[in-house]
Image 1 (cartoon, one colour):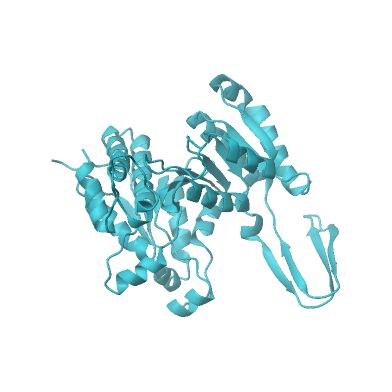
Image 2 (cartoon, one colour; image 1 turned 135 degrees about the vertical axis):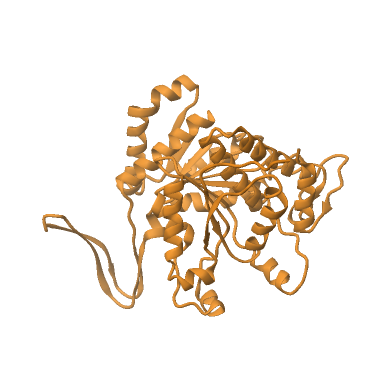
Length: 401
């Protein structure tokens, strides 16, 4: 049987540690038997990032802009321990942060629901999608250690040379200081991405910040969302029968917990970082979360929401068999292939991506799964069976049409 083909390449961003191993197995067992992969390859493994002084990460981000679709493996963001372990020339920034800055995108993360894995919050019967603003705030902040008594001031120098000065704090002793920013352009793009995503999904959009305390910073987010909604999306939302709601972030959290789910929850960068992990855990596992970065001009980067699974990688290097959950990485590949199929009106590629996801969920629901799911799987008449990663991938392959 001839393999499925497509015309324009997908940017393929290889990663680190156990997810790097799983990445190759997914291609070998699930994709390459049916699809003639056409990718533009970038090795974002930490060793190669160090060899290229991180230029490979920037090139990968530009490739996604050019090709329109990318798929990314989990990567290491090095700390001092990793710098010593890998003998790095310097500490490199998060590849995700670099790529998000290039695309100026919004990260949408949605739990993958499976019969037999019940959310820890029983009222959640529908998936909740987190829309995380992927630019600025604490992730582009300047941190300062104040060693002794000092007067900290914020200085703004305008294009005409005039200045504005604001007192931050009069330190009487040692402390810490942080300066962070965002831009109207990025916040507006974030708002439009969220409203468009909600329209496509036909789901309500909620947004929460803390404008009662952060009257200018968070207040700007609130004002821009309101302005974009009123001018560009209100009529379309009403016609689609969906709603946009703004509330304070703490009230938003309380309302989400009491809800049945089903909404898109827009969050500022830090809130989205924290809440996406909370939601993933509450729905079952961080490895059961799909994630896509969407730019304002419609470029897509699909990735797994979790890390590189270091502990399993060390076991793998020692010759042990591991039961590492590959579901989020499978859904990253299926998402990228489906999106490429949509851009080329390639029904065969779209059908393959749909079948890959269906087979993955069906395999777990039949009782075959990785070790992280065994303890939380409860389905009448089904006894969960722990499989190692390759055996689990082969079980999925056997379930595909």
